[in-house]
Length: 433
Image (cartoon, rainbow, N blue to C red; front, side, top):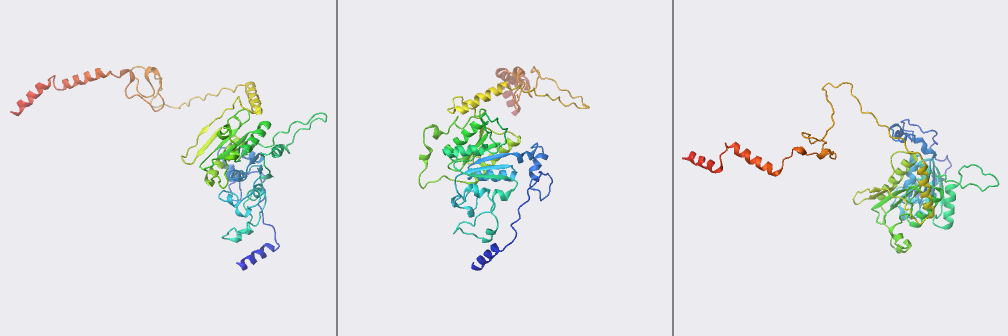
């Protein structure tokens, strides 16, 4: 071990060129070659899923909370080639986080934002066992090493404090180019420079901070969460005025007036499964991509239960009696904009395809539901039946039960020449003599 340690020390002290980093890619290419990191992403455009995938390079996304869900979401967006990521978190990496994804033991003690964003990394934690110490020479998995094309901004702060609220809002708004205001007028409010905010926090206060900033900036955002028992989770799309804000339908604990801080007990921690967090992070990033690249549909609320493999989806409408005045104002502005918008054009009706020839003279006629009508799509009194349902007999020709019994008895009598049961017994006895 001493010889190996001396060899490693000599290798790290020896002068030499810095490790080569991937070259920043210019325009995205769909060329299917091993050296193109975007070929499989651009295939979405070739297959008609996304109209213009290269738009993602102009997208800015903020992630609040770089923990079990947020760090995985940041990695996914980095691998997808998003233009800019803003990371917000106040915590540090701990060895207790190693059951989750993304972070590595050698990053313990670093802030989560720095560990995710910086190039290279530390030398690890003393006493942590390593099966192969040679990995100390290789850079850890950070966003800058995964995709240097992505600009990453790290903000080590607690957004749930008063100072953190102001700093968070300022970071969301700063560096956005806007028209200069006249010298005698107050500058216009700075718009948000991000296209979407992803909330990956684990407490109500931080969610309310994101909610308030989003309402003030008319900023769409996606909220996510994993249950304390680590077997379920959800994501939710919140668009100010169009959907419920986070205060419209508060969690049961908050609505009951219970302080969530009183629920934590010393020596007791929430469960954590990387599988559940990976599923929620995947659903979150999938919804974000659909939102910013305009493909598919994003559910207002999408849940996940790992115990039953259940994915409930629903829409949550805004609450007109919401206690947040900013939400009520956003609802009024959204209703006014919807009323002023022109009606959508009528959908074009495509003509049915016409066949060039009809060798067998097949024609389609309307089913009027009269007598003799089959049991295909016709129903009683001319009403069509649901798909897959049909009558076993024509509805108009179905006989009454009494008439059916009489007809059956008459048919049996005719089959035996009109003879009754006594006559048939006498004939059988005569045959036996």
